[in-house]
Amino acid sequence: MKILGLIGGMSWESTALYYRLINEAAKARLGGLHSAQLLLWSFDFAPIAERQAAGDWSALELVMKDAARRLVSAGADAIVICTNTMPKLHGEVQSVVDVPVLHIADVAMTRRADRRPGTAHACAIRRTTRRHPT
Image (cartoon, rainbow, N blue to C red; front, side, top):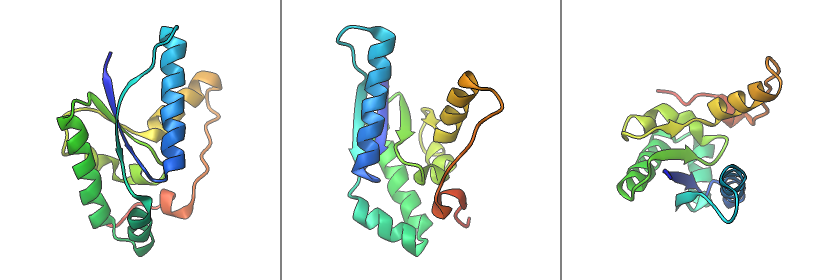
């Protein structure tokens, strides 16, 4: 079984949801008492939220890259960013690790297309839909 690295703590509630859903999927797929093999990097959300509000995406990029590197060093075979906003930094995070960084939009669109092709919708806050300046 592959080890999935979770970058969480943005907020802890979303991280808990990702943790639960990933483990439910592992149990449904494998049966019995199986669960996912996960590594979790959890941020204190207050400083993250402050940087988001200030538009300090360069600082956020640095902490996200560091978290991804730490998870890969610990043995992660792939990374998931457990929030709706921070996948804005997907490409930057992917550039520093040699494992896949799964993008929430790709997974959501694939899942939605499996159910009802051509009917994907997204709901997000403004900060989620705007790309930070490069």
